[in-house]
Length: 173
Image 1 (cartoon, rainbow, N blue to C red):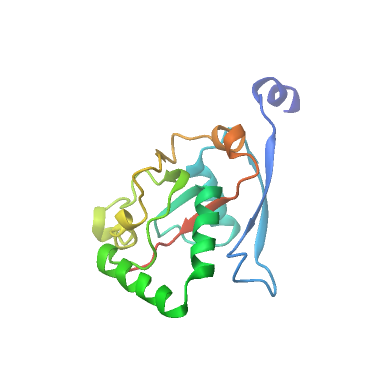
Image 2: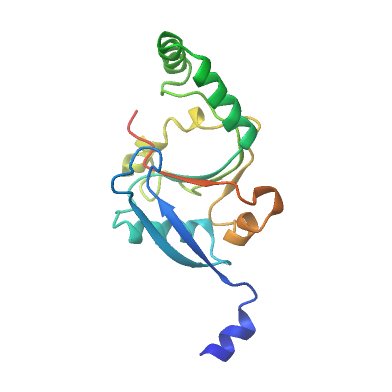
């Protein structure tokens, strides 16, 4: 009933547009628009995304608030690198982390509470999560998805107008 809802709900819903790989998939662009209660947790938001994209929720996930300074630094480095330098960096990263790409600093990383899920590592999700250390950065704070409300991130002034990145399925290696 609307009257009860108005009394209980202190914050409006967010109307969020989620685009799959906007830099890589553009013709046609794949996206969903979702209305989410602002008091939903990131865990619930993950579940909504799974339904919206018709995925099975069988992989680990996280949400990241990009650091604009770090994004600009990486872009400048990539612009200056030759193809050979880029390849050497990737090889060095594979030697250090076991996965391509260097650890990136974010303003915030919201992580799955139990990335192994029921059944532990052998449940299937564990394979995704076994290289999690390659995605962690010592200066990136991490919070559990079941503990953080959408408004706790999306309404914070320091995160305003900064893209939120959702990663689902970290890959098998």
